[in-house]
Image (cartoon, rainbow, N blue to C red; front, side):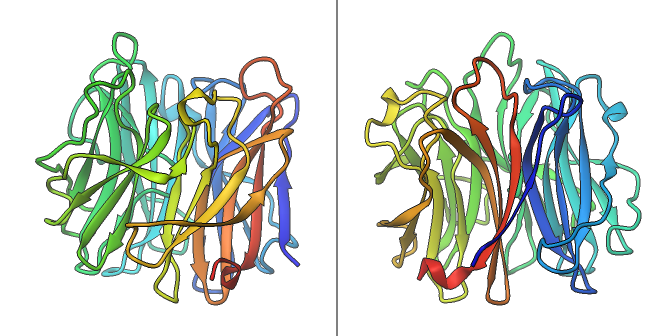
Length: 341
C-alpha cells in the first residue's frame, strides 16, 4: 500500500508545488517545496520544509527554509542534494526578481538541515534562468551539474536554450558549460532540462513544444551537448519529465503521456505515466499510469530512491480551475521502487 500525504492549499496558501526530499543521517526525510501566497508563477513564495520520521505518516511543523524576502518576486524550485565529498546538504533554488532576472542560488547545511549558510550564487550569467525542482545531480567523479533553461529577458523572448552550470569543488565555485542545446524552429526552445548519468555519458531530457520529450547527450561531463532528438515513444504536451536510475540498473521516466503530443494544452498534463528503459534511454516501454484521473493535472515530479522505497513528490491541480494554479496541492508518495521493474 502506497503511503500518500497531500499538502493542501488554503486561502492564504493557494498553491503548493515543486518539491524535493532528502534522507537525513538520523533516518528522517526532509521535504522542501515552493509554498505560494498566490497562484501564479511570479506570486510571492517561500521555500518551506518539514520532516517525517516514518515515511510520511506523521510530520513536523512547517518552517521557512528560504525567505521570500530574498527576492523581489519569489524564491522557488528547490533541489536537495547530499554532496558526496563533504557530506553537506546543498539546497538549490531560484531567486526571481523580474522577468529579466531569475538566478540560481544555493545554501549549504553542515548540521543536517538545522541551519543553512548564507546564499551563494550559482548562475554566473545574467538573465532569466529556469531550473526545476530535484534537478541538480552529482556525477560519479564528483562533478556537480545544475541544468538550466535560459533567456536573456523572458518579457521579450520566451525562446530558451539549455546548458549546465558545473562545479568541480563540491559546489564552492561554479562556471557555465561551453555548449548549449537549442531547438531554433521552436517558439519556446528547450525548457526545464533534467539530467541522468549514463554508462557512456550524460543524458539531458528536455521539455519542448514539439509533442515529445526530447533528449541530448554529453560525453564530456556536461560541457558540450549533441543536437537534441525526440523520444518517439514519449509523446507529451509542453510539460516537464523526470528520469532516474533504479538500483536494478534500469531507467524510469515520469511524464504526461498524450498521444496527440503538441496538440495537447497546458491543462492536459494528465495522466502521470511511467515508462522504463533497459538500454540506457534509447528505447522506452510504458509501464503504467501512476495517476490516471483525467480530472487533475500532475507535473513537476521528483523521485528519490532510498533502500527499497521510491519517494516521489508532484503537484496535483484540478483541471476545472479557470486560471492560474489555484487549489494546487503537493503530493508526497512512497512506494516500492520494484513497482517499476
